[in-house]
Image (cartoon, rainbow, N blue to C red; front, side, top):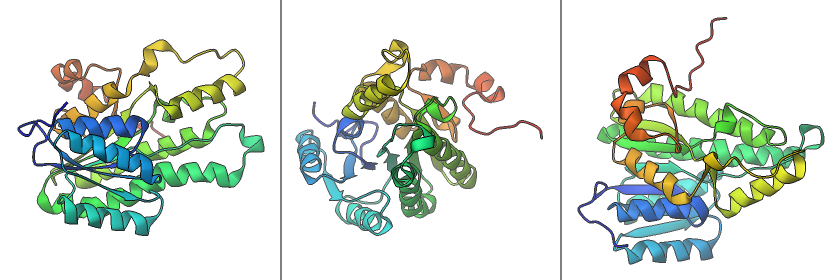
Length: 276
């Protein structure tokens, strides 16, 4: 499919971490088709080059940088390269993520903490790099790929659940800081996505969870469904849900048609309001 030069994201620049494969690749392709120019990062040059070729085939401009999202210097260079080649970042998608399975009682601490580095430090670094420009321009969208495991944890995935809970708190904290500055920050729970990472996670669950056979079908999604929701967020359809967590299985149009009630009942809010 070719880029829609008059599309809803025409003239926008999107920066996507982990954009070379799996869900990230679907996201970059959807953003490009919607009119955006796209810059991606990842750790494997071959997959990044392949993704760039796919993006450029749509007619979109594209660029990439090899680097670890938890490496502040590498990401600073990547953002600078994006700005030089494509322009300032209008849309940041913190997609890069990882996980480690197994019980805490026998966890490799370095492996466990590496999940925090990628899933929390990475989005923090990228947000820090692009937010000043977004605030100065009075516009921008930041999308963090969260997970329902942040609020509904399961055994054997403590590092992943902990990192995603921290990412949700980062999401609503940043959202509170940028209110009134034209920047929208939203978290997305993609459910179980049919990618290599998703299949690995399912294998870990099958090995470590007694009685587990397969993921609940109504929470299994194709990458394109998640990419479609992110495109809608990027074009501003969900701005009213600033600071909230949206799940790909929810009907965004239905939520929007009932937004006053949704907001009034604090649905999808990440803030905990329990009295202490």
